[in-house]
Image (cartoon, rainbow, N blue to C red):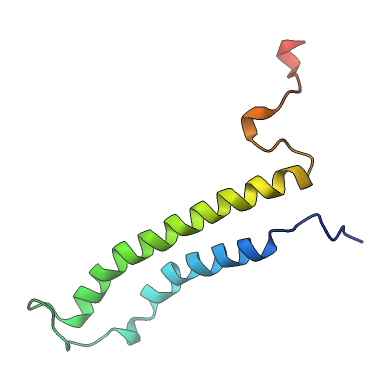
Length: 96
């Protein structure tokens, strides 16, 4: 049986997965934006929607990254690791 407190950040990882999935799945659903109208600056919807996706998906990826850093920071002590990767005070084999 697993410990109930071993993974307290499961919700954060679920949000990270959803944010990243939006950036992967939405561009693949071409039927949603396969049209000419409405036009924006002379560009058909098909093109300007894809250009709009670039900053939107970049922002979603950045948010997912920041959430993953926070979740990793909380998960590391639960797995017996130091809070920060560089904080490990154990000696390596070469320092003995």
